[in-house]
Image (cartoon, helix red, strand yellow):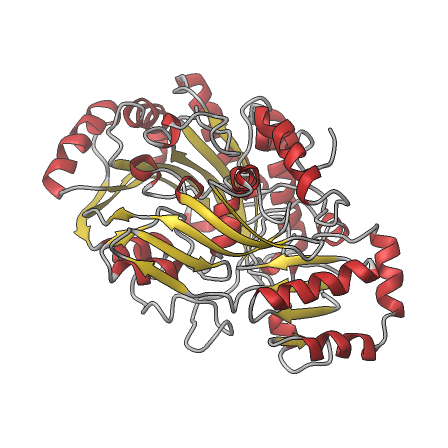
Length: 505
């Protein structure tokens, strides 16, 4: 899921800026077609302009909320040299630009009124099974990374959305169903090749530019340079057992309270989410889902302890599967082939569609009291009342385990003391009215102001342009070090957007 607050805000904060938006817009207007042809002729890849066939599709981000964003050009880079040529082109002309991998930025920051430097063709996944490492092009989609690793019996922990690019996911942290067992995606990052705004091609690892490597581990995408490849350490593939339990809405507060106490003491092998949803005309939904790295019989003992806290579910599913199939189920494409688990139009065979949605995030640090869980339940009931035909609600995704055993300053990802991440989201379709969508926006704004704890923090991969205290919410005590890294690798602040790491507080 993705996020932003209003169409006006979306169109005013679009990606990395070379100079101010006004100045950049003026320079774009003066840039003639021969100027773009000059860039096009220098690339091994291709340049797509508004007059090019397929531009409308290629300009789209994953979230169709941002369908009105129209870049002046999209450069499909064939390698690091193309990335360097693109950066040289925009820096010399002081044009706005942004880098794009999967195009899933919650704030629409994967687009720009200027040049989109697209790295999706840098998608190779090269596994060294003996060393248990993998080199991944930063344009690779998560489903392709998981599929390749599956053949070697290895895993890289990460998110469940199959079409997300590895770059943004990693640099924002990378939370997923294996995180309690193996840690975050960024915790496995051991090296990266990057191109700076000055055109320097550098390698960041434990021995070279280690400060930049630290910043890439949770410092957010698009802040320092354009990464062209990553190297990760891998883990052996575990067995996977999935479960899904549903409860009546009247028990929602008790279920959320019991689930929080339950997950707080579960082993690292067990990841879970508790979801409270308004389903429009279909009513409310309370469910506890999860993935256990172990057998069905062992999982049953853990679910017994959950039942002792929340009672018996009205609907229960428990089943073992391969890890890849488990990830496809979590991604909502369980009946599709790996090829089909791509966006339609994003290469041959993709069947997944774009979505329109908005979200906010927060955290829970310790188990809530019944009074507090009742507040969360009431918040979903408010959404149902104010926007009865829009689907949405709250997802509480478990942290703890290996995530929380990493020191806060060991990586740029600072959220190492949380019980669960909270994502509030709502989605809509083409049939939804403008007033209905606006009601959902108001609900999120109310939720952020009245229900969320401003001190709890927010997940930087759910980047939220409406968040006023975003610097501290995303980065906390690591912000000052991130600013120091920014000054070293991007001293002219070329990689600048509405919520980019600043050069000063």
